[in-house]
Image (cartoon, rainbow, N blue to C red; front, side, top):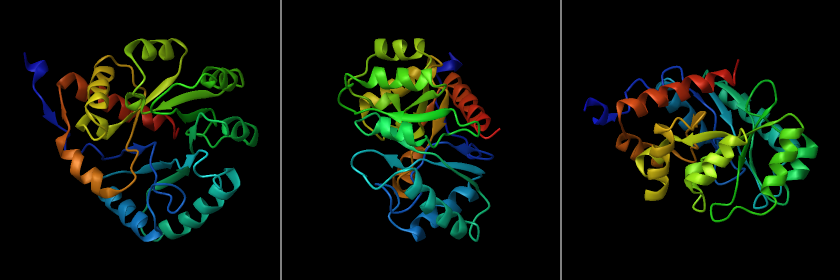
Length: 243
């Protein structure tokens, strides 16, 4: 019976944490609009115990200026400012939309989550699974890359059967932490808890676009003992991307 008791996220959950999905790089997408707001958030995260972060700006048709060169330059400028504010270890990757521009990013060279340069954070449309997504992911895997599907719980078209097929294809899954609090609606809430209980996730990220939403929803997370154990395992898995 104790398995079904619900727990708050422990106060020290973020101690030593590595965030593998966030939008703190300012002024490049729908994340933090200014350097000042981003640096403020970075300092607050450090105070909560976060030690490492992977910045994952959007690479998608809505942001045509975002490519490997321009984003790398923006990241290097930001790191210089961040060094004076916090000691969090920063790394640059990207969140790649599986759209018409995806293969051009493939050819230019992916910004990967891990030091070995193999794990590629990907997302699809929330509403539909476009017909050529399967082919793009197949080409990526044939080239030796590991697709990591960002926040699969948020895809409205996806069913349990979809998730099972993706896992059979060896795609890795990244949970959005705030999905567990209902930040993205009831369907994402229900799917996230289901997949966490089933052990389907491989990593967890904040997908932080701003501090306000994080502060609002973080206290609303309630987890069973099994879910909390699974979440701590994902926290450990994140660290392997920095090894």
